[in-house]
Image 1 (cartoon, rainbow, N blue to C red):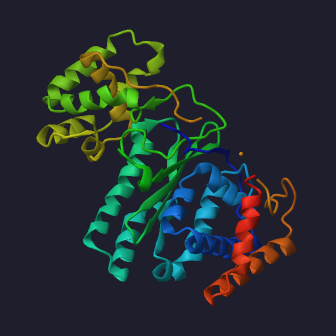
Image 2 (image 1 turned 45 degrees about the vertical axis):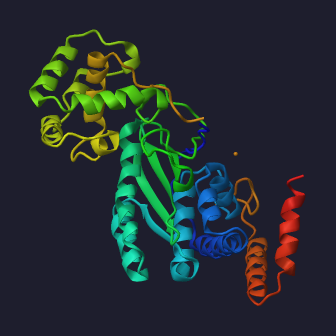
Image 3 (image 1 turned 90 degrees about the vertical axis):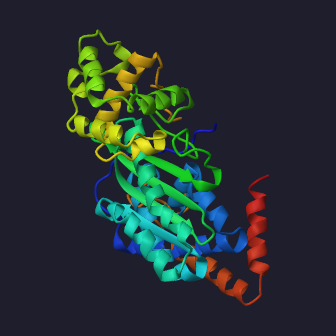
Length: 361
């Protein structure tokens, strides 16, 4: 499977200046409307879920190509740009950074109620929670999630863009999902992973190689909690191979007993249900993974699944300062193109398409 859905970027301080962010909102709105006019909603989600296209999109909007802030600012601009047009376009952007990310499920339900979407859309909050749990717990690469954006359409398709921070290196890593290419939400679910650096210490339970471990974990959690705790105690006395990079403290995470009791009372049918167990965090899952490997003679993947565009410059002046005149002319051109298209004049849009084909040669 092609893995290209994570971008790793250095953490930069400061915020996008207001004059730039306002232009990013206008330009992103115009670009999205052109994509919707030409290719439709599904293609918009597919592009947003492509980390390379998303990175180039942020650069066209004038943000620093190598800054972690590109993710949060571009998603923020998209949300503000499409909110007043949500009913017209059928595209809804929910979530955001920090506390805004925690409100994502409520935002999804709010849009579903306001627009009168079918009952099936009520599953989206759970999907939102699952994608965050996968990237924060099932894939343990050292990055703590702090940004989560969930984009969905009236057609029932969705995309997720979320980002985590490695506090020790001050690098961020971005994760992309797309329902249109998703086969299994807990096995290599990303549209891909691209990164400037690969981590040496990773536990990837989403890898295809880790499928026996996922199955073993579900089987193991059907056992009485005291039996599993006894195996953990036994594991402490073993000389652990260096590849696990585990300390004794990792085998006694807080709340593990409650997790085991909850699992025993209601055994998970599959790994997706296992991840939904209340209180199950990265350390608890890491401890249980080690025990399952010892008991069932299976091995989880510990290979990092992680594997770049200037049009208007960057906010910090790299590779050159944003040219406000050129930026405004770009926005004006796109907005006028859309206006003409809506009244039946598609000549300019056709010329724009021919121009894009020229650069594919």
